[in-house]
Length: 170
Image (cartoon, rainbow, N blue to C red):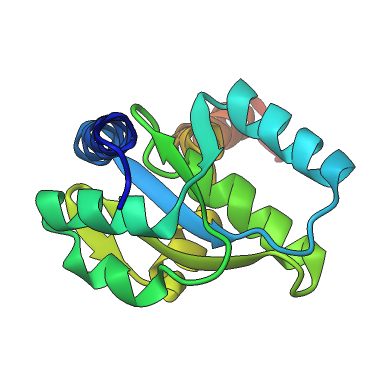
C-alpha cells in the first residue's frame, strides 16, 4: 500500500492534469514509443515555439483526471506509452504539429485521440484538424478572393477607358 505522502503527490498530479484538461482549448494524446531522443527534442522545441505544452503522462493518473472532467471516452486509448500536448489558445496548433510528425514517422509515433472545446475527438478528427490550413493561410486565401473581385472591376473599367480613348476609325 502506498504511503500517504505518495498518495498526496499523485492526487496533486491528478489535480494538475484535471486543470490542464479543463483550461485547454484543445489537446492531443499520442503514443510516442519508437521516437529517438533527438527527434523528441526537436518535436518538443517545435511545440514549445507554438505555445503548446507537451509532456509524458501516466495512463492511470490521466484516467482519473479524465473521469473528473467527463472525458470518459479517453479511457479506451490509455494504454502503452502516452504523451499529451495541450494548447490554451490555439485549438489546432498541437494537432498540426503532431499530425505532421506522425505522418513523417511512418508508424513509430502515432496519434491516440484528442479533445476540443470540452469534447473528446477521435484520431480521424485530429487528423482533419492537423491538415487544416493555418490562420495566416486562411486569411491570405480570403484576401485573395476579395482582391480578385476588385482587380476584375479595375480591369473592366480600364478596358472601358481605353476603348473610349481610342480614336474612332473613319
